[in-house]
Length: 254
Image 1: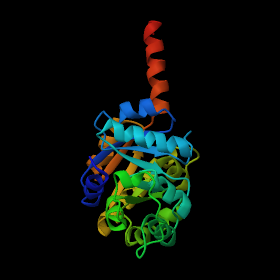
Image 2: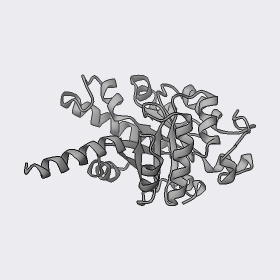
Image 3: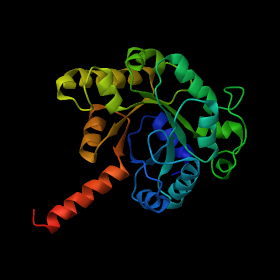
């Protein structure tokens, strides 16, 4: 699938499933990208991936041939967003979006003039996304993370920002934002679920996509059934540990 095809699916709110990568291991990432996920997202905020790693892992995703590479950038700074897109990302997931102004700045950083302020220098992306500015603007996604008290409070205004393609729930931080003592705190389960519904409903009203991070496939299926547009299964590091632990237990007869 090309970046343009994936962007169209998200903008048309066709349901998609992705995978989350935090390790700088391009061979492993390439294998993941061959499995049939619609997208593979590289975590440039909390993941163990630097600039060189983003480039090599995006190339690995493209080599896999079936998924589109996204990058969760570390901030909405124009240079950060522009670099991820120049490396060949099919879109950016922007953290800590509190206001419509924050979302508008992220959109501007990802779009070329006159619709934005992205600087032209698509060193790798021009090989597959674009290369003209208008083509690139149509082919890349901007997704704003909703994970803070302000982001939740301003969700309607954020979803209404022109050019924003979708919102993306960071459930760990959102749980803390609604009063949880830790991610998945059962004491705030009801208010957390209400927050997820609020995000999903606001996105639907605005006609944009709503996505969410999930620890596994069953949870992703649940959120898609509830009406989320796209759901990410996370992550390579956690799943590696879980698989190794399960094999160890089996080997010891436990």
